[in-house]
Image (cartoon, rainbow over all chains, first blue to last red; front, side, top):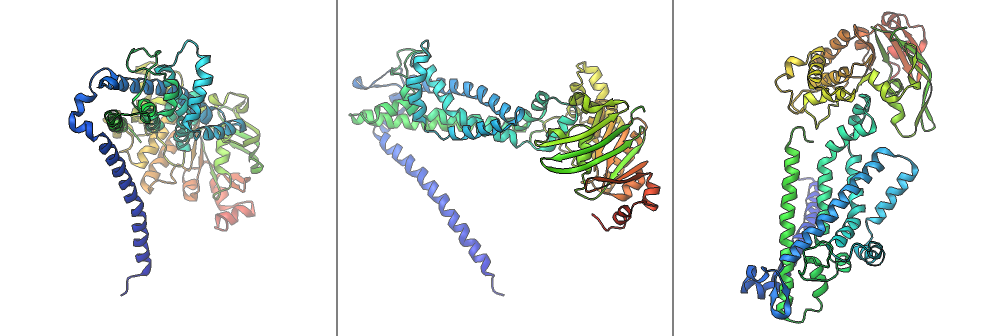
Length: 288
Length: 250
């Protein structure tokens, strides 16, 4: 019996799709290779000691990144706390408490806001937000808030979708017990959607960690003079954005590549941590 | 009048589409009133009007009244109504993120009871009423997922009972269950009618014949006929009832 031709075309299609996957892997390898090649001169010298240390003064050969790591974590943390609280709250309001035409319009608007490039938020932060917040000079706090504002629309959209995906029969079940809207949220919506919500928050946190342009615009410029959240600072990403194109010595350039590698490493650690957290939450009694 | 549940000229709409046409029906206390009719005849919409769930659907509205004894349910806060008129759904819908105990306790807590002993007693009592206690008493604080569908459905009945309603609505509760589990739910309904006013929506005529004290037939959103099942099934007074029973509809 002859094999049906349908089968052959099926295999062809899968092979075709496989090509895209191969392309992605190749892209990953290429980016990794470029980073390593750029960082190579300092990597072979003494990778850890090179970046260890408090101060970044290229002219004197000091390339300590501890402060930028601190700046990255603090500004992302500030942004995420702000975005999580405001974002989950807004998503709750839009999906659970209001169903008018205006709400649909607002959701559409937020969808649009989520695709505005980050540089727009950065410029807005520089010119509109910073003077308004006189008490808050350029620095980690301002950078954090910009990051928060920047990821907020994405967070609202994603978290809102998670809340929408709670099965109607469960919502009906809670309502039929005489739950108020608030109780419905507490008993069903938040517990059911929690894994998705945590996932969405981490996704946005990841975006905040690596955001360079908007941060570079509002963070001011200092290389570790002060630990204050309200003094000019820098993050790993904003450092690269600011110094890369004016890097005039091979050593500085190579060090910035190494900072890029470090950022990728921070990402990886963060990614594994978020997976572990989601796994732990979903392992508890009655996870969905 | 006691706890008789009565709809008066009840019409229901989704947007412009009318799905119930002036339905007037009485479900007396301590009896099982079954509502039969083909799929899409408005049975579910009708019972969702009785506990005021209908209005939670965007675009839904209704005309007419529902009375419990001499209280107009549409003059009350819907939250209060739903605590008096409990509901069990087609698909078992235990809360998947809560333990067995918490599923039943959630309703008790919604009633404002905070005392842990009282909650535990109420949970045990409700589970016993659904003859589920012996099966789950050792796994009370575990997830609901290992339970069979039949057990999950009885858990949903227990959850509804725990808030001490006056009326219980069963919306095709055995539709997705195996025959044995379905039979246990039927026995449970028979048992519960001593305490509650019960309304049972079903597509299963044998089931209606077995458990009903009163049966009403809905067709295209209209109440065609109501009466004791023996009469309705053997001597229908409306031609459409006869057609439905002999399989010419649905």
